[in-house]
Amino acid sequence: MGEGTEQMLAAVYLGDGVLAVQEVDLPTVGAQDVLVEISHCGVCGTDLHLVLEHIARPGSVLGHEWAGTIAGLGADVTDWAVGDRVVCGPVRGCGACRPCRSGRPSVCVQRPPVDHLGFRGAFARYVRAEADRLLRVPDTLPLRVAALTEPVAIAIHAVTLSGVTPADRVLITGAGPVGMLILAVLHAQGVHDVVVSEPAAARRVRALEVGAAAVVVPDDLPAAPMGRPVAEPFSVVFECSGHASACERALDQLDFAGTFVFVGTGHHQPRVNHNRVIILELTLIGAYNYDPAGWQPALDLLASGALPVDRLIHADDVTLDGLGDALHRLAAGEIPAKAMVRPVVSPAASATGS
Image 1 (tube, rainbow, N blue to C red):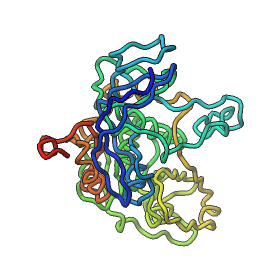
Image 2 (cartoon, rainbow, N blue to C red):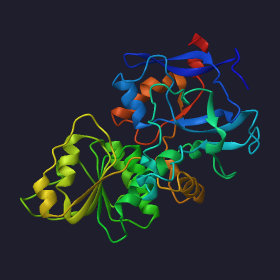
Image 3 (cartoon, rainbow, N blue to C red):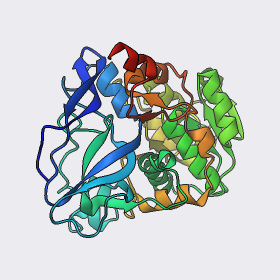
Image 4 (tube, rainbow, N blue to C red):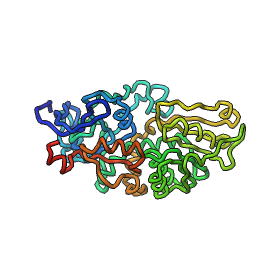
């Protein structure tokens, strides 16, 4: 299939934090690619950073947490058919470098860097995907839920790296979509003694609904005495907010031999009290992408019904023309769960020709 003149609707980044619905060319589909009609695409924290912090390249189409239906096949694709329901997994590791050999293919040294500025994403009606990266969505799993596969895979990876067990007392700082998914994965794995720290009231309520044993506001977390744990310490902390102050306060909450997992990204770097890390023999870990098994465990977990997806996904779909507003509401904590974009325009926008 080659590039034609047919066009589709997409949310296009114009610059200066502004998105607009425009008609753009359908993606070019190579011999080993497929064309996928998007059902839903989740809004990732990366999308917020790229738009609200004016990082994205003008003219780009973002969105990478998608599920959809195959609408066209490249000439060499034989394992898939038009109408198959799919998600697209990660680029595989090389299998030979040191990270791959140690079971960390998500940081394979041969993997090309993620190009968030140049790729054509799924805040659009169609997207191009490499056929050998596709995973089949079970018939019983709605595509709207299957669009959670990538962030669930990220949550599973963070939990795996932490080594957490049901005997641990856990703190999650930041109850945005990633923090909430980590909470849900922990709960599904039998880890129930989990406290969530979050400034937004709506997200604290949602955390209790997803399974938190308790919720607190960040100011409720105590400062640690020198060289000793706080009165009620945690053995594992997942820092999901990306805020420097949250990182610093969360580190104070760890017990002796505790584990701290950096999950949320941010521009301002926290100050790490290395003396405390030494005296309490703390372990600090970064969680970037996925386990060696990739996305299939996440797809299986979603299909199992073990996750409270109705509390993890925002009830109302976001249309292409409403994406800019949704990004601001997500950043403000007003949307307490994962926002899903459906690649259509609202009736009001259609009526005005937007």
